[in-house]
Picture (cartoon, rainbow, N blue to C red):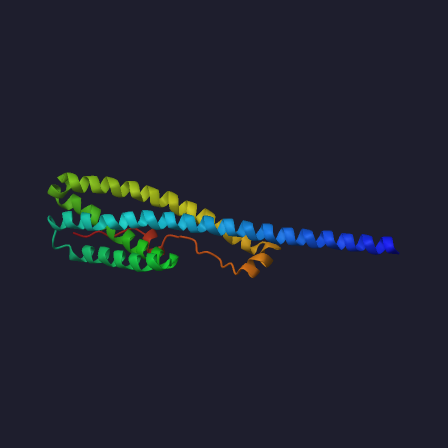
Length: 191
């Protein structure tokens, strides 16, 4: 009888230790995944800030040639304000909205060079266009990295039994960075 009690106690102790080990290793894995998402978002935010910081320079150059294009300038200003507010609070949805506004306005600004040959010949404007394209490529790459990190985290907190630990930890699903439906359509440019 004593051997049975000892074996049951030992077996129960091993099971308890295994559960404790699983709990802490799962907790630590969720922390790493969460930090990966935070780091990826920080990278997105940094590159988007660079892109939004370019806008005043482009607008100032274009204003010298096309000062009557106030609607485009207003759209760009609104996009920058929306981004600044959303970025400061870490609001992924707000940043996506600002990106959608920018996605509608920037092609109009860049297309102005076709209507104004002197603007098209302006070396500063041409350089800013090239810089903008490079940053757009970076935004695409970093957005994909963020979405991959967020998807890995979201999957981890939904998988059973890891979802139990995620519940204790208070993990919330992360929003994916998706293109706005309006930004997916074609941009209408009128002169």
